[in-house]
Structure formats: structure tokens, C-alpha cells
Length: 150
Image (cartoon, rainbow, N blue to C red; front, side, top):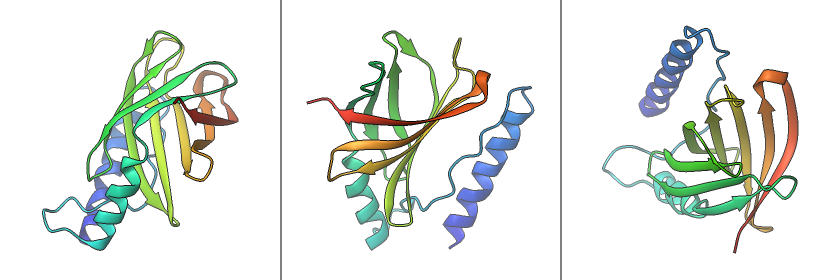
């Protein structure tokens, strides 16, 4: 419980810090993440196994955009890249558990992508990431799907 409160406080501070940069702040997801202590728990083991399923290259069929998840730590921090087809800077990328689902949050910060975000859920049955893309400059949200590249 203390870890959840600490994580919430940390994410709130990060969000407030970003909002002071004259850029729209996007709140981080508030789901369960794996435990960051050294003591293994059932929650951290389950979340860690679920997070491992996220690794790989994912493509949006509607435009060829690529989300590459290279690594994920036990706390849910992702080492991710985004390409269209050139690299777009990923400001932050997180995996978390919410309502029994594995979810991903990605924030982009680059030319033409200032504060754009993805909020995705893993559809393991269909090997897809499904969710929404927020196009910050247009203030528009789109339903999107990424399919794993084989």
C-alpha cells in the first residue's frame, strides 16, 4: 500500500513538473505496477510475467507507425522506441496493471508530436495492443490498434 501511495505521489510530482513547462501535462496512468522492492510477491511476479509479453515490435496497420518495446523492468518502466518511419522521441513509457489488464502508457515529445500519448491495453489472445492515441496539437483522440510484427 505504501508503495502505491509513493508511486502515485511520484507520478503526481512528475505531472506537475511537466505542466510548468508551458506544455499540456498528460496525467500518468494510475494502475497497479509491480512491486519495486527486492522481496518477490505474487503481484510482482504476475506483473513481471505479463510485462514480458509486451516486448517486441508493434505496428499500427493504419499508417505503418512502429512501437518497439525493447525492455521492461519490474517496476514497469519501458525501454521503448517509436518510429514514423524515422525515430520520434519517447519522453516516457510505462507498463502497469489495472483492473486485471496489462496496460501501456507512452508519451512522445518531438517535432509534430509535443505531448502526444498512447494509452494501450494488451490483448494477448489476438497479440495486439489496443487503445487510444491522443494527438496533442489537434486535441483529438483516436482509437487505434498495434499488431505484433512477427
